[in-house]
Length: 420
Image (tube, rainbow, N blue to C red; front, side, top):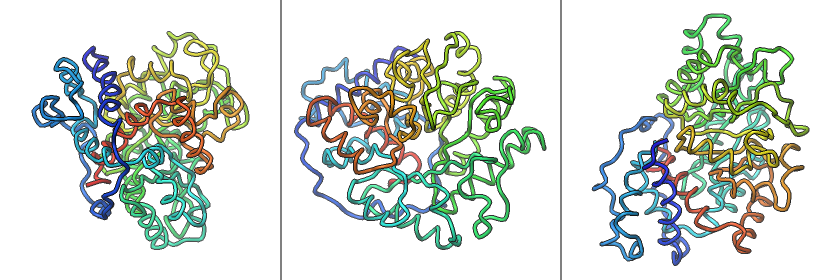
């Protein structure tokens, strides 16, 4: 990763803390952002960067920036991250937000079966993760009405996501009232028709999700697995790192062109590890193996402009022998600084036993924030919200870290057209 990008990301923390120390609670709510439509044209996933002169965060003209010297300012505006064209709008919007609103934006909560709108409003939720039960016994029209109600439930529209990998992990396909077939796994698709079939599936799937007002797919699976005994074997494409990279690049580009963000998973690479839904998986591989294999598909997706990366709960000894990857600062540093990822980092589901048993002194959501995640997948929105709020009040979490994540989340939502 280039030095200027490293410096600019570091300065993002300093900038936001200095400018938001005295920010009031949001008081100017309106519905101007509630005009999102799934068929509106999203910004390109590899959008062009903005000239520094287009940003108005000039320390000479801004009272809030009076303590920011010229050199630090130049480092900030040289950030060439994938959402940087929308940092200014995101910053302007964030200045109007209360702490509670900012905490809520970081929560990617399980969507409840009932009272979803009320829950979203109460905790200012940034997004919902949808599961099969959310689509059971519903027509396509039913789903669209419900999804629209969530997106437009608040002044800042929600992001809606599903795990629609294909094969054994699907949330929507297979439900006859919604679609007449079930999406196949990447391995099945490739065996059936090679990369051309992968392209066709990615196009069909992303257009289908967009019609339902779902803007993010928690896929593709970037993991390398060629052993049928591996937990991730049936969910991976089963090819070499280089061919898996081509698959990841293809899915990323097609999906995001159609307005559906992707989440590359499960960083830093699952390998032959066990299922972390029910216990911890310890990865003893050398770091060189990750560099020469597991990182290659992730880097391909990042270079293609992937908006999100999802981090697993595996303990990877060569990176952090004590904390699961999802709540490890070291793993997040590698993702940001070694692979150059500037988008949204999200945890795998924090209800999994692998992370709850190894979180230590603080709740998993608190460790997730401290590690550097932008959004956290949580089952219990109320508990997660209260845990983070308490951690900020008790100085465990610096509010500047919340601000940095929220700035990136809002910039993502502006980039995709979710926010106007």
